[in-house]
Length: 342
Image (cartoon, rainbow, N blue to C red; front, side, top):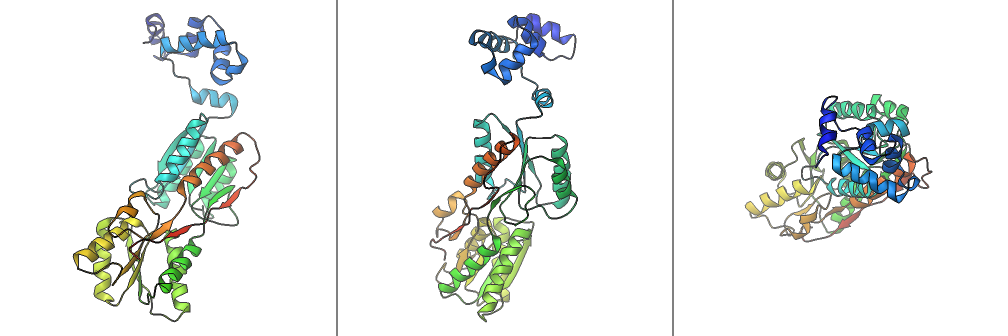
């Protein structure tokens, strides 16, 4: 409970308990409270204990923005991701947040909804708050946002992709290699008539292009593509299969740009008495936690999202503290997890 005398006195001003209030109650100078909070090794155990007791009595919450202005460090990391709804990015964000939290940092999360306009506005807002680092899913293309990120001087980690020219640091994998590897995997399984069910994002399109090019190089039938746009739902996967088997009933393998779309395809196949994988092989992307427990269990592309998050946190903290990052570009690769659906 806050000390009553301090609370009454503070309400005459801003209404907030201040660092000076804590210092007065602890019997020390305000600078000593600041040291106890930010550099406890610089004060004695007895003084630190008195300051902590005063903080407990007043319910004081340090103004991290003010501390950041004084030290040029906010201990805040911003993450910009497309979505957290049934998202392949969940594991990455959880690992990023956990690693940062354990080191005394906080994560500020912004969602773009796969909108380039929203992403640009969000990045402007983030840069203006001067966090210690920024985590971005994907690679920033040339343009205003990339230029502003470079000019900010803030440590940046781009992720879930690869490029030889990142803004700063990069932890990811090749979407083109995934597309080729999935096509080769299905071809080795004896599949000859392919389709793709895909969302409209640029990374998925690069996987699709590599998949199609690999199939074409072997002289096989043209790959049918059903684009669900921004509707990344189980229902969209069901509707996609319904449309595909009407236009191209010979399809015997489908590569989906997400596990959720793949689940929709399998659900519709079951409804139509199409046997998976005997008549139709289905592959997803992301390896979200429950797909191994589906019936049939989903064959998919596994990305080590947790490692991306942990490495990104370590890179950003090191760079924000002025330490050199030994490996600024990390290619984590991917794994095809073979299960019952393909």
